[in-house]
Image (cartoon, rainbow, N blue to C red; front, side, top):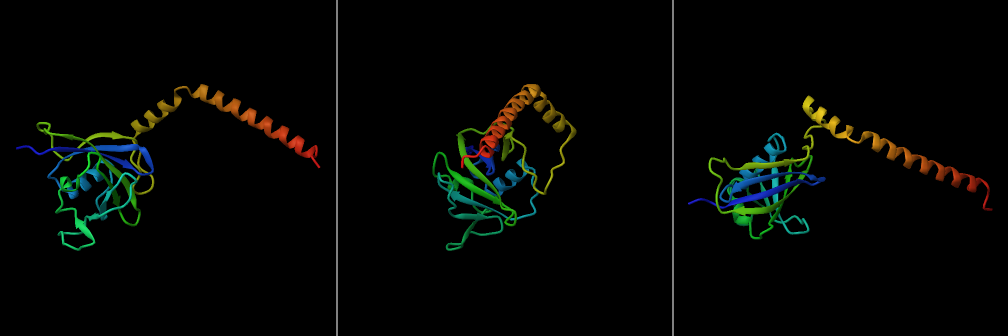
Length: 190
């Protein structure tokens, strides 16, 4: 019997154009999910992390922590290792907040965006389905490959002249307006 596949979109909190789509089997744990998120954003796994159950307003609910090893009845946090992701999916658009490295507080908004009844054959889960945007650099500046730099340059060369003209016009207009305003000001309203 195959397990339902849960598809989550994991957004970097500071830029919702930067996200990763990750699929996992419902019986995989939050620890599996945590590791997949780190791999997808190219972070190391040297720091503790927490998932929080969330509502539509991204409020922090019950915590699941990477360092908690067992689920105890009145413990402040559940164990990522012991808790299957499906156990906390109660809504069709279930949301979680994922926080990595308590010192840096890298925060990601996690939303269920799909459920498949069937696994994709020969796919190893958790599976990173899609990557959008450049991941934030975990430690300051990220080494950018030569190809990436070329890609970025190409992106900005397109229509660069038009952009320059546009900026030029805007700048001139603003400058004139400022000068005019200054003359009136010195011309004295008093």
